[in-house]
Length: 112
Image (cartoon, rainbow, N blue to C red):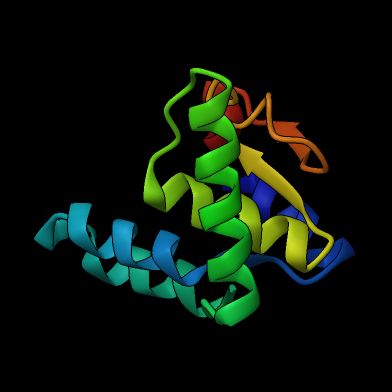
């Protein structure tokens, strides 16, 4: 959380709309208030036609290369690329091979 506060002072933080959906889907009842408070600090970037097309292209390119890329991960990557943003993630494995995607590796302890 401290990392997000620090980064939020330097620039506007944002999430893809599908990430917001994933957060809500996995949220426990006792986490709702804190989660909603965090989400209120983040801009939510909507899925539009260009991002959808880019996500589909990313899935197809990964498939041709013998790698699987999930629809949510493709949308997240396409959103970051489309908005020229750096993707912050705990798990770079699926995102590393995507051309044009800038990654920031989050340490598991970054939330402390």
